[in-house]
Image (cartoon, rainbow, N blue to C red; front, side, top):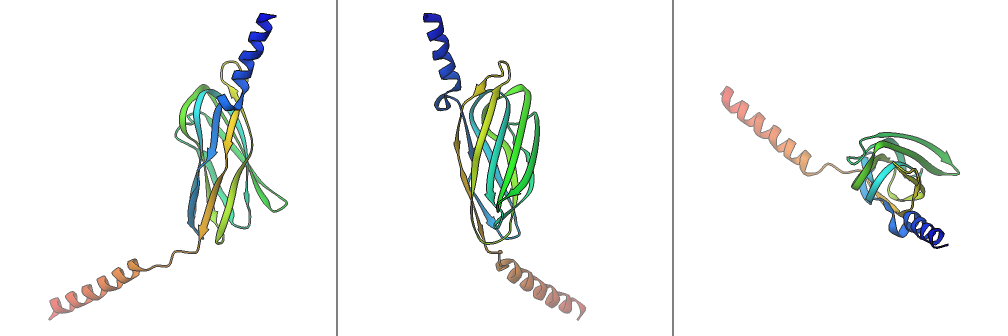
Length: 177
């Protein structure tokens, strides 16, 4: 009986999200028409062999341009995007036969801002597995937010270019005289 109790206790600690992996979306911001990088972070990864993450976002505000590896991910990544009832859904699958350890970016989603507003980037689900035992790793999740502002209006750069052209024209005119 003691062995069974010890095994149940051990399995509780291995699969309890409070003691496992943390997966979160980093908040980000950008402008309409701009590429906006949104990292998916893990904290306290230990022997992470594979992970599936499902994320939703607002299609009216954002468009997915790409999904790629973060610096912590040395293995494989694949993704799929689709639309369901006005929501965008990204499914990301990560696998590493050596196991991922530590904290950092595991994936990066690049969005394009379509219009001004904010979109919650919601982690709908995470399934993670140990590289050696293939047991589930519990995961705490933290959603993020992406804020899109209006298009950047050229300001100082245009002023500087105009002044440079005027000075250049004046200098070249003086040199011809």
